Length: 155
Ligand SMILES: [Zn+2]
Image (cartoon, rainbow, N blue to C red; front, top):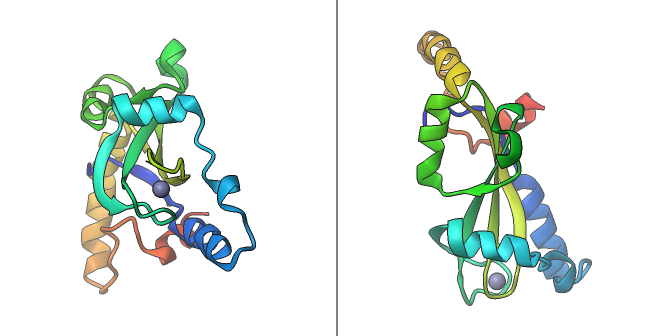
């Protein structure tokens, strides 16, 4: 979605955790601790991926999208299907999305990224795109949210 704003990418932290698991510094049980709620959310609202679980490699990861924000009222903190997010983004001014990857086989789970969505973001994105055009002429690339430089810059 091109309306994503304030994207924070947690892949560095994830890699660090996985390194500790593979080194034996952190027990598998400590990181494969998805709650029954999270597993249910993965089953009913999750977005399947083609990525193998980095811990057990038995199952593909599922992405769960949690939404937060004052405008959501009692829906805040709920998991939503990815397809529902653009609809919410049209109707709400601003809300936050937390994306958690879950393995339904071994219960590995980790926050992968967070971002803002909403009508406010849409307007801000118009401005941002103007800026992107200006900075692309200087050779800077700012389209992807996965670059670690960008993540460090955002903190
Ligand atoms: Zn697994």
